[in-house]
Length: 123
Image (cartoon, rainbow, N blue to C red; front, top):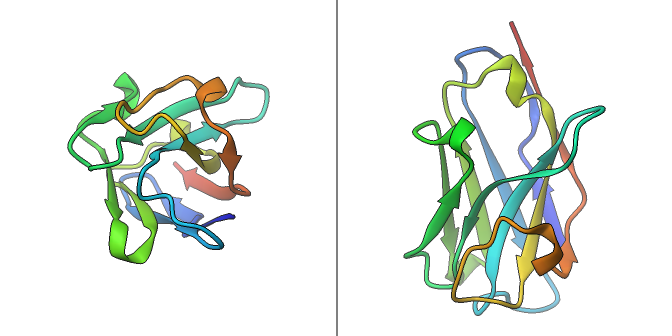
């Protein structure tokens, strides 16, 4: 089970850190991803990280602003979001993929999903 938290209301230019805590099993061998979906838009992968944390993926719109990381000992994945923009407003979801070696932006490669945490960025 994956539990996402850390969302909230923040002004443009602000920061938030999302956490995704796993319970019931370890996801140390899985790659992990953060996805978001805004009203009326398709879900997109914001960032992903492989099992070791060495390889990451970022969608172009968040490069340089967001950082994905993981703490294997805590079975937790983080998404540090800086310089937030109103267009970052969305429900954010974490997910786990059995393909641990490569962080994939393709949602069909993920088979465990957490509930969403809402991020609202005001202008």
